[in-house]
Image 1 (cartoon, rainbow, N blue to C red):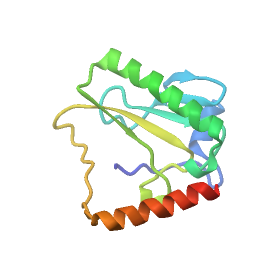
Image 2: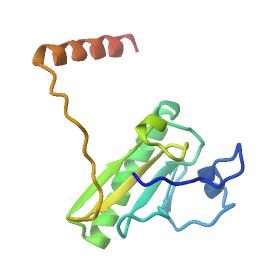
Image 3: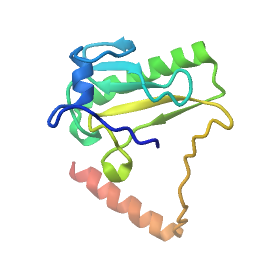
Image 4: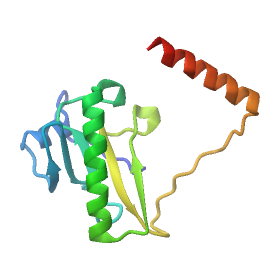
Length: 148
């Protein structure tokens, strides 16, 4: 993922400044909980970011209502991207934390129209654990879900 350097003053969030109208943006859509705007680092025409209006750094910091609202806005924007730019593919991307390649610490999701040979590479080394290891992981997650 290309690195973006946030030039906001320390303690200020560039997306919060955008939501407040303090910095310009090419807004696509907004509602009570979300805002959608063109990514200034367009990968392909139609690359949109959908963010929560309220500041929340990661997925773990948003409310269930905000998560649902982002999903609805992403779906709506994805349809508009498809209808407008007619890409043969679409990638949705959401990153959390530095190790997850998050560069702006305000929850957002990328809606990226995709074309062959567009330079985007989403690959990782497969580990292919045996079935019993996968079953163990699944059991751990089921236990965690039962506790929540």
